[in-house]
Structure formats: structure tokens, C-alpha cells
Length: 200
Image (spheres, rainbow, N blue to C red):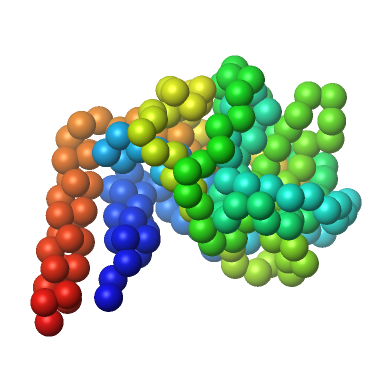
């Protein structure tokens, strides 16, 4: 039986494709976008840890806080490793001083943070091996990108140098209605496929 989670993943992949957001194999790529009155945040890729200090231990849940350029996907209350330093985007993702915790999250716990007067860094799963593929999701229900204090745009974090240079890119999107009409069509196809499989 197909789960709701698998349908969301399929629709998320379709949305990213329609929005022209590519999930690259190297580096980290995050996207935040609205879907049917909710906001989805996805992240995937890999991390080169060479040249970073760490790990430091921490526990994180999927969340965003725009003035700290905090983004975090994955499951709740997960042990993660913290590596630093990274160069955060400037300006930050917005000016909200409130941390919004996601309503649901799954996959790998990955994220970045830049608290003023503290060393900015990145979070990866506990005992993460450099270069290993990562993928995580978070969903904020009954909200908008603006409600989360986020400013649409493309933001980049960088770290390392030379052969070990690496980066993370975040795209915060608020697509035109015509784009979402096409995405809604993808969702309808997914539900049709689900009904057919359940009946079979």
C-alpha cells in the first residue's frame, strides 16, 4: 500500500522539477515552497567535512528561524554532529526572531545555523561519513512562507577551500498560480495511481 509520505515525496520531486530546482549530487541543496496551504522544506546532497572543526554534539528537530539563517530537516529530537565554521548568507533569510518547529519531518537530520556572535556551522547526522548522500524533509502545516518569517530568494552557505570547498544552497520560492496548477495536476495523478493500486 502506498503511504501518504510517499505521495508527498513524489509531489515534492515533481514540484522541484517544475520550479527548475535541481538536486545536485555534490554539496547540499535545500528548497522551501508552499503547497496547498502548507510549507514544505526539503534538503539533499552530501557534505565534505575536510577543513571543518568538529564534531560537537547536539540534538535538533526540523525547524526554521530566519534571523539565524537556521534551516533543519529530518526527524524530531535527533542526535546530530555540529561542524564549523561556515560562511552564512548575507543578509539572513529574514528578520523573524521566532523559531518555528515543523509539524512533521523524516529522513536525515541536516541543517545550518548562524547565531549572531557565535560561530556559524552545519548539522549532519550523528557519526556522518564525509561524502555520504543525505536526504530529509520537513512540513509546516497551515502556514505560509511569509508566516515563517522567510524572504523568498536564493541563499548560499560556503565552507572549506581549494579541493575541499563545499556549499549549501537554499531556494525559497513563492511560485505563480499557474505553476501550482501544474503541480496540483501531479498530485491528482498521484492520487489516481494510489486508487488504482489499492483496487488492484
